[in-house]
Length: 168
Ligand code: FES
Image (cartoon, rainbow, N blue to C red; front, side, top):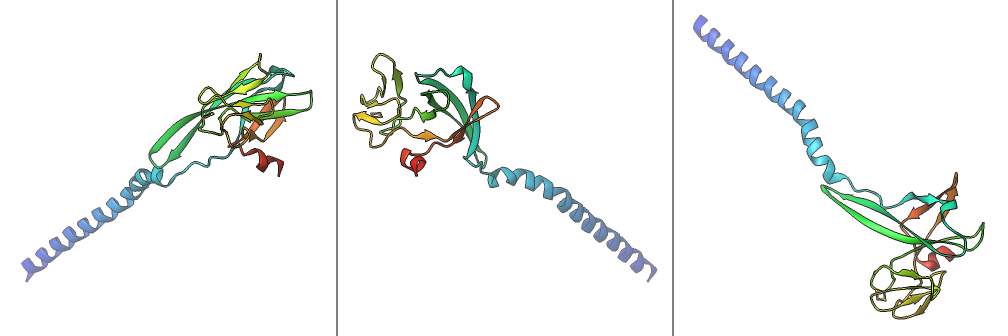
């Protein structure tokens, strides 16, 4: 009888040890599982206000280019994309910020000072200084960024939107 009780106690201790070990494993494992799964649940919002430079560094009367990068996180996958555009200051108070992405097939347009227009090198499209289509296949004007000046720095809202969405 005493032997049977001793074995039973041993079994009880072994069972309790196994149970405590299992509980500790689960308690310690939750943060690890969370750490491993967390990136899969994350997606970065694409919208943000981005500083592109000091207002005083952009001359009045001629477009000046700028560029920036944005990273996009989707689960474990992170991609970094480059974006560009032009700041057009027609006066001290008039500020227009255009995307340099051609609205035809997304090539980058260049400002051609001598022609007074943006030119797309892919299919020779032309856009006015304000981004209107002057010629070629693009279906829409260049996209515009909503812009503000905060403490002398130009801030743009990413992503850019179509011209008609800005004009409302
Ligand atoms: S991509 Fe610009 S004209 Fe085709």
